Amino acid sequence: MAGLQQVEAPGRQARSKRPRTQNAGESGSEQMDQQIKQLGNQLRTVMKIVGQHDREIRELEAWSCHTYLLSKDSQLAKDLRAAMEAWKSKIPEAGPHPQGPPRWTVAGTVANALVKDGARRAQLGKFVAFHESLSSLEDMESSIQFAVAKETRDGKVLLKLRPQMVCQAEWHEAAAVLREIIIAEGGEQKHGAAPLNPLVRQIEARSHRS
Image 1 (cartoon, helix red, strand yellow):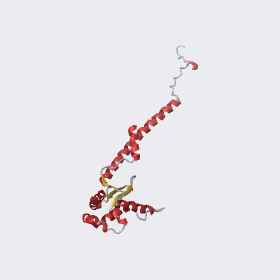
Image 2 (tube, helix red, strand yellow):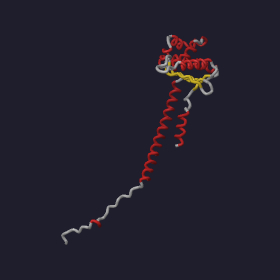
Image 3 (spheres, helix red, strand yellow):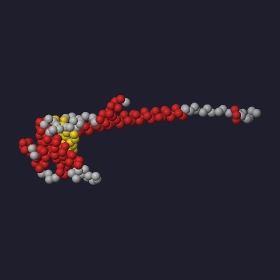
Image 4 (cartoon, one colour):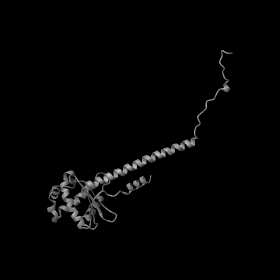
């Protein structure tokens, strides 16, 4: 009849088209590839940051430290090796070291050698006066901020010294005398940033390949 709307039979109603979904395996693979790509980009960023941070540290160290490479047969190298071996032999099973941090021993050994060098005392007025006023190894904290002496693969001794800010003038005198002594004994003073350590070298090489 004209007054009624025609209704389609239920079986003949238009069926809505369902969107075609991707195969679950293909979708998971694409997501995994995307995650791997993102992780790769993040890793490259981290590697660049590590490399930049390492360069900045090495440049700061070169600027702030007096660095020397001592001949393995020099007296100072022998004194430093003996002092560090003695320090290591007293490492306790627990608690602080009885001789304090190794920098006190390293710097104390260097200072003792310079103070006892009668031929060069005239060049070390401030240095001698300051260090002769110290009464214990612990007092070296007021003199030195960082000090390390370590043997290289070829038996030489790498010596690095960073004075406390309040003791810069005293160690400036010492640095000039140390340079004379070390060069006379077949060593050298090092300038510029230290080379990359093996781990950072590997990181940078991988970063460049990526």
